[in-house]
Length: 385
Image (tube, rainbow, N blue to C red; front, side, top):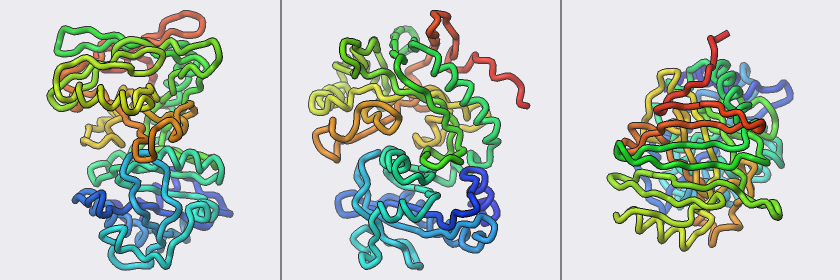
């Protein structure tokens, strides 16, 4: 686990606290009768209590007094937060939202106004709502959905070098008109996907959150962009092709037209389930993100949690995109519980039946730029300065 000195150093490296800032909020979601607990979730709550206790005596160094808040879970990743949270007054963490001290309830708007720095080690990702709220309230938030002790080594990396690499990749994505990805499924089936990158700006998420109004994952280390979703009149999205995703032992192939998955191929249970989901929730099929993680180049190994694994290489997300600068938000889904932003990570461990044969960017001037071959970067990052 991290000791007090390491936690204080992490806060200083990630947020670079300012002299006039006084408070840091740690936000943690709670299970309830509808969403039962699990061991990793319980350990994360205990870790949050530990962090709050260790950061308190370090406030003379960081300038930030920690406040720990618990809130009822939202049941799905990136759904909107509930109205408020409960301030933890000490002792063990609540076992359930039904056991929390409601007398200490505080509206999230009030928490956001009074805490310029936020850590969110949650079960369900709060990245989308915190990104949107940060723009309004001007706080800085590090979101840590699914964080486990196995990820702690990734918090000790050289985030200055990570920042340099992801900014290089973001610069390429910014200048690109399209991305072309060729996948190989089961060793011999080649599938191609073209993503339209026009009318969009790329983002560099390096784990440094120094500017007010920003929120991002920690650990981090990726460049990402929302493909164009066709919102301009008379200018439909040009994203099209086939996108394979492995679910357990099954490979499902999505047919993409105008940046939406509109059908699936496959004869297994996963294909039937995904076809039904697309029919019920068309917004789920929105191609919401092309992400390029760099942490594999620092020796980081996948741990089975998307928070870290997506930072290791190529990933493509479905669903909500408004928090990244896209057009698809909660109002495009049938109900709040259906809102999702879900990443499909292309690593040998996570999808062993699928290989990324190549990723190329077509630049605005027509020049092609090779980015990946056989799942590894061929971009020249250059020597560390």
